Length: 142
Image 1 (cartoon, one colour):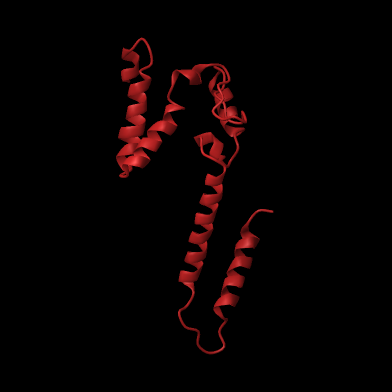
Image 2: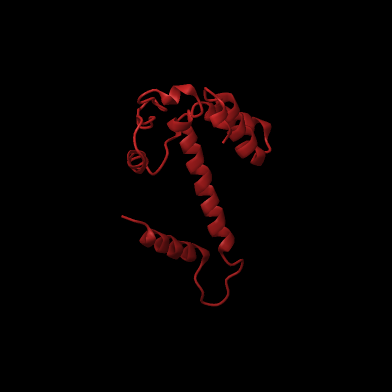
């Protein structure tokens, strides 16, 4: 890989390749591309090589010390399954906004699946929604 050709890690080139070419090539909004570049600059930088560099104020997310492959795998497996907004430098309200959007999307999907008209002795739309919600709750882990 081209990294072997440099004495020092070309952080700016790496950031460009990932933010602009890889992810940025899939993002059409210029402000979103700029946001990706800013967020990734915290991950593609010399500071991440410092022992226990913290990606977040809480310290949940940090750069592990140098080690073998199994130590890195263990570090990854011990990370939270759900990323907090602090990891990306976002305010906690971003999570609230995301949850509201996801809830609205789920509700809109459920409503779009309902029959437009109910004939005969079939269940009402409210009853169908209640049945589907109970089915979903039964599938969720405790």
